[in-house]
Structures are given as structure tokens and as C-alpha cells.
Length: 314
Ligand SMILES: [Zn+2]
Ligand SMILES: [Zn+2]
Image 1 (cartoon, rainbow, N blue to C red):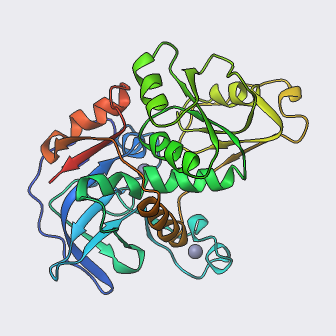
Image 2: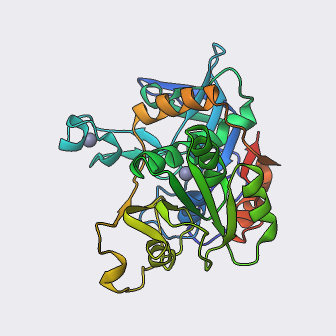
């Protein structure tokens, strides 16, 4: 499935087989998770994607010699810039991202730099493993950047939050889930995964929060989250794109509250998280669609109809 221009639907196309270059592996794609970032690329909210482009950066595929590998968002780094040299390859100046600067996994075949591929834990099927590769991984990094918060708020309870909620519970944290006002089904889903409270993003939780992770791309959630944060708390913005954050009184930030974003992942995040997911174990709630229905999959996320994670099956 190919994106030819932002703002147009993906088109089914027969492309020449991708040829692996030096250090790359050829993968027979089994499953590819659909991420909100794919939607931002398709809708033209992220600048200068490779075009035409194959979207998809949560790829589970098999090599010709039978190894099962995961391909995440971080597809390549230069290894030489000041970020790479200081253990922050997620911020690499020259980074290339899967399904954005590099062709991704909404396809039957994909190539990837083997150094950035992650081994898939044996306990996971292809479909269940795919959402771990971005929803899980970025969620995990967001949780780490939220510090040792005991009372954790999650704004937007989709693919990423439903995994993070389980990791947080596994670590003994208390989880509070915020959804679109009135979305009782998603609130019930959040409670079924261990949230002690679930309500609308316009509601006050029964206790103040030590940290909040904002997954929904709505800037107005940032001051809303600050307003229910305890002193010293952190708001972590987990998405790659967000609407403008409205101005708010300094009082909301005062008392050492902070706001920060999370960008991309490092390979170390990937290894740590996949080991933890297998150990916990994290259960992924998945809705599958065939590859040819990639546009419908994107639409489900756009309209908030997706529940848990959406995965294309090849
Ligand atoms: Zn670099
Ligand atoms: Zn993603």
C-alpha cells in the first residue's frame, strides 16, 4: 500500500521487490501495526516524508533463514553526531525513520538495517508482537521519563496507553485513565486493564497525579493535565505531533511541575521493553485487518473507533 501524496488515500500497488543493501535484511512481512504517527504522515502533518512511501513502523517479519525480527520506528542513525555519541541516538541529527524516511511495513516485503531490528520474544504471536514495537516502546520510554510517579494519569486510552497501563500496574503504580468525555466503552476497557479510575479528560480524578502521559494529539490536554498534577509532577507528551497548546496561568506550572516531550526510541529502550513485556507479561488487545484495508485501519484511528491496537495482517 503506497502513499503517493499526503492527504490522499493509500493506493494498492505492485512494487519491484526491495533489494537489501549492505547490512540490511529482507523480511517477509507477517504483520504491521498501525500507529497514530502513520496517520500524521498520511495527513501531511509531518514535514517531508519520502514519496512515494510505504507506511508502517511496527513490522514483524521473517528472514529467508527463518529468523523473526521486529522493525521499529528508528531505522538508521549516523552514529557520529553529538547525540549518538552521548547515548541519545533517539535524537540523532541524521536519523532515518521507518515508514517516513524509509519504506515501512504496509507491504509483503520490507528491507531493514539489521542493527536496528529487534528480536521478537517467543511468547508473542506475530500480530500481538507488532504493537509492542511502537505503541509499547514509546509508551515505555514515556513512562520512564515520567519518573517514579506512583499516581499516573494516561490521557487518550488507545494502542499505547493500554500497554503502558499494564506496565505501570506491573510496577505497582496506580493508573488513572482519561478518555473523550462520555466514552464509557473505553473507560470500561481501561478499568479492565487495571485503571483504578477512568473518566473524561474534562474530569478531575479522585486523587491528584504525580505524572501524566498525554497520548492524544490535543494541545488543550496539557494544561488540563497540569491542573490535576501534584507539586513536582511531570506531564509527558508522547506523540510526534500535537495541536497548539493554549496559554495557561503560570500558577499551573509553579511548584516545580514540568512539561516534556518524548522523541523516538533508542535500541536499548527496545531491548529493555521487549524483555519486560515478555516477563510481565503484557497482553495486547488487537483488532486485525488485511493489508489491503490499510485505509480503513487509518480511518478507525482517525475517528477514535479503534480499540486497543490495530494491526494489518499480510
Ligand atoms: Zn547521530
Ligand atoms: Zn508509532
